[in-house]
Structures are given as C-alpha cells and as structure tokens.
Length: 269
Image (cartoon, rainbow, N blue to C red; front, side, top):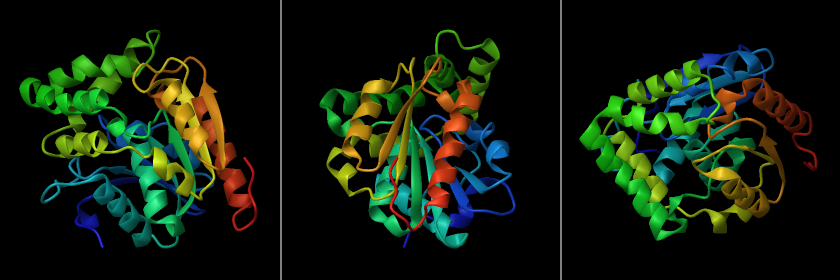
C-alpha cells in the first residue's frame, strides 16, 4: 500500500520493449535530469523517469511524506507496469533506490546509485544543513534558491549552458511542501546499517569533482554493499549523468546488460 496515488505522478517514458528501468532524480531536480539517459536506453529498455511526489508536474502528497513513502510510491509505479525494474537513482534518488531495494527486494533487479550517500542522518551537522535548505527555499523562492545552489552541482569547469539548464530545472521543480518532505526524509536517514540487506547487484558511480556528497560518501555505499562495482566518472561534479552523459551512459548500459543477461544466475560485479 502507498499513501500516494500513483496517478498523481508525472512520468517521462522512452522505449517500447525490453526490461523496465526506473530513474529517480535528486532532491533539487525532476525527470528532466535524465534527458540524456532516456534516448540512450530506449533501444533496449522501457525507461521511466518520474517527477517525485511534490515535484515539478507531480501532485503534492496529502500529508507528511517519509523516505519509506517515497520508496513505496516508486514500488507502486513499478507494480503498475508489471514485473520488476532496474532502478537508477541520482543523489537523493539513490537513497530512495536503496531503501526501495530493502523494502521491496522482489521489485528491484539491479541498482545504479550515482553521486549519492547513506543519508544526511549520519551526523547532526549534515541533518541540520539539510533542514536549513527548507528555510532557504521558503525565504528565497524557487528561482533565487536555484541560482544559489545550482552552480555547485556541477564541476567548476562545466559549460555555462549546462549550469543554466541545471538552475532552470531546479527552479521549475522544487516547491513546498514537497521539497520539505524530501529534505526531512534525508535528515532522518542513515542507511549504513541497511546496506548489507541489499540483494540487488549495484553500480555505484561518483563524479571526481563532486562538491556535494563527494567520492567519500559513494565509497561508504560501495563498501557496505555485497554485490557492487564502484566507478569514478572523470571531469564530473555532483550531476555526473548530466555533465558527462556519454561516460555515465556507457557504464550504465554495461551494468544493465550484465544484470539483464545474468538475471536469475549468480552475479559478480
């Protein structure tokens, strides 16, 4: 059961056949974050990228929404398309993906977790910093908030057009109360004890110039998971899938093809 009606979700889709892939965006973004992944995957997969509950074109939750609620809503979306899915999560989306894999292991064929973290509940300072973002958004409004935060999501050498696109996506995606629920879901989460429960083969990626979560947080994830590969994406900041899409897509496709071909058999990554 889910506390959110899946019909309220806006979902971008690509591909007509093949295994299902579900893409979950970061806390300051939307389905637009996967514009470079949908066409790259569409030839061999059916791809979904959601606007999370309370984001962009998706309806607001009716009340307080926890990390488990986000994960359960993702599970309901997978069930609505039948079978199971390969789940790709960026940053906050990676935290949702990991929780989804723990709560609904039968629905997750593989995971790809990019520029992510075990959650912001790993320290009081990180939790407080996450909660402070909600106050900042309320005070500044979406556009000014995006202009403050967006440029740090990519590397210092990112082209201006990418920075502008990241800022515009954030400005058009975040609002209250949805962003507040997402921030609180991060502030109250520490998944380190749950990583060993994840059964799905997992690809962990991180941009080498990630200034938000950084390679250290991704190393914690990779070290705690049983069946994992860890990749550093060169010349990429926090949004490696947008800043270096060719490199990101190559690793993602390789992982998906391995996971698909070996489904039901022992896997080593």
